[in-house]
Length: 129
View 1 (cartoon, one colour):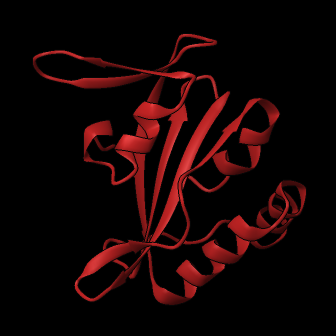
View 2 (cartoon, rainbow, N blue to C red; view 1 turned 180 degrees about the vertical axis):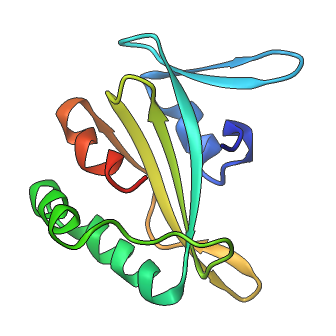
């Protein structure tokens, strides 16, 4: 598990209306304020083929994405990859923020801007982990 402050999307996450960032001497925590649940950062890396699949999944409507994952299984994450998915998921699964990056020119570049989901819309993203 990664630290919230190490995410590329940390600034967008801290600016989100339902997230409160609490800093202490040794840690930085994100709290989803409607439920007071701790949101944890997760970074997953994918090979080029699996990364393309992740990109396609994230562009699908949520119900189709869930059906696709259930039917074909979740994308397989690797140690080092051309794609990097940053997720911030609350412990109660009521909040999810995510952003996908592709490695190009010796750095990760965003495929799309950070996306935020709340409530029942979070369920399909729990299947990616």
